Image (cartoon, rainbow, N blue to C red; front, top):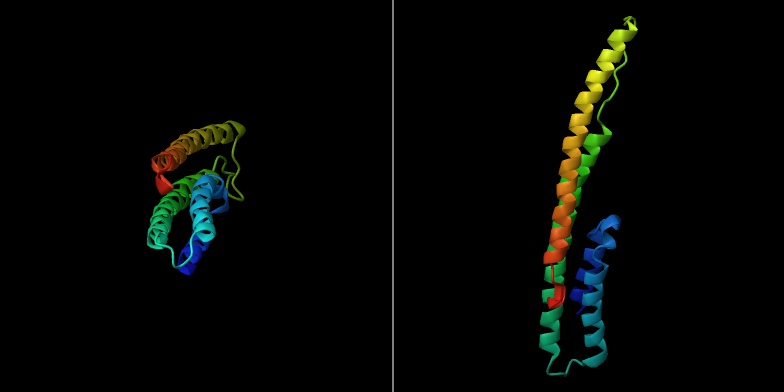
Amino acid sequence: LTAALATRARLARELPAELRVLLAGHFAQVDGTLGQGLSEFTWASADTPFFLQAVERQLAELGALVHRLKALSEVQLQRALRAVAGTQLLALPKEGRTVALHEFVAMTKEMCARGAAQIDSKMEEAERAVHFMFDALEESSVGGAR
């Protein structure tokens, strides 16, 4: 039981803050099973092994979901958002170089067009990552309930 409580705490710590709200219901299911077992069973109870198996199963399912969402968030979503944040939309002429206004406007339009295309592409990646996250949540059934 101590190991189960430690696993539950570790999973909660591993989960990025922005994803905790999404998994609140899953953690509540595990907590409900733990609470029920702690209040209803004694170590002499015949159902204790079943309780421990149920807790271990729920924690394994929750752990898999936490790791999947964390990977999607860290790898796909954050990478796409960092790329968007680093997209250059304007380049000033090198020091000492004079550029006519129409050249500067043309350079800026070209950079903005390339930047907009890159941002669009990365936002599509971010959107796919978010859809994968929601799909993972919809597919999950910690403790057998959806």
